[in-house]
Image 1 (cartoon, helix red, strand yellow):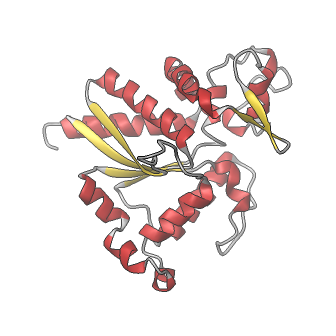
Image 2: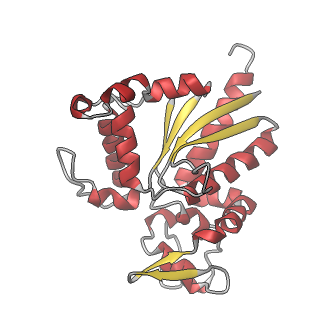
Length: 250
């Protein structure tokens, strides 16, 4: 038994993490889970990924969704013939996974209302509504799964560390990893573990090391699932879909 999912996400580092988790779960449940990247997609010649972020996720959703403004889009005919449903059919895939970090919700300004919440749940609700709007859907289709990393995929990396470590000393004992905003700063304070660099005054993790970072997440996957609701939801989604397919009446 196998399951195949198409993936639209913010960038190549997310692809690495998601594929590594899917591979780990495949091994545990002894069933193949295939993650096929759809956007961004590695260039066949240069082997590099194009620049990609949440705005590119938005553009993809609007292009391959059911939005009325496709009528003014020069690629409207292409979009209608290659909708997200068509992509699933062509690829013989079971579902589409759309991943987006929720730390960017305050930058989304094309909805009827602007983001004004403060909780991780409000961020996820706003991000979900934004994606549905871009796709032109009123409700979430059963063959689309939204992976709304709270606040980002790097939250899962931070959650591999024990709560007793000094980087968390200023936080209350019962802190929620998904509420932490300065994730990269905390990770970079562990400078013997992570390679960081300055990008116009903004500290970032080196993208060249995400294979090892994703392996760390997988090595501590149960802890990450215990600490991060979104990680637990995603892993359960992968596991349950396989189990439902194996059920006698499925």
